[in-house]
Image 1 (cartoon, rainbow, N blue to C red):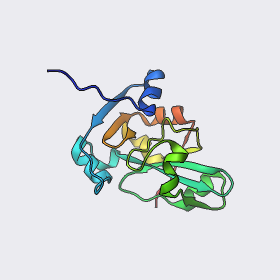
Image 2: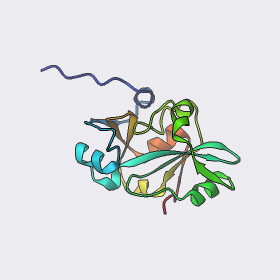
Image 3: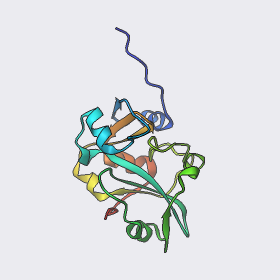
Length: 161
């Protein structure tokens, strides 16, 4: 049996270049269900370990990246404070690909077009590995939270409501 080769994304290339351990999970996705519940069922990882990547815009810093548990909501006041902004709003979806190089449902905090200020919810430290998008829809990677911090020059902060 021939194993299907997974097309490398910027996120995977960067992780491999730095020789960081990770596990790929490919799964069937649909436009109607890009939520973490669906991902959890497909890749057989508990929902608490599946994190989503959100991009916001601060009035002083411009784009900022938040990595939070998929079953939680981002607290804009908390990320504003952590990033040194007075006001933060979510990046318009139409600007996501031009800003990050990724599309909705496939946005990874690793390997964006630029290195934006990145904040990972402190709850990630409770796990040896968390699952994040590997840079395209239908592809997740399990990776150590500290590795995400290293690759993005990020920091752990309380980010959820």
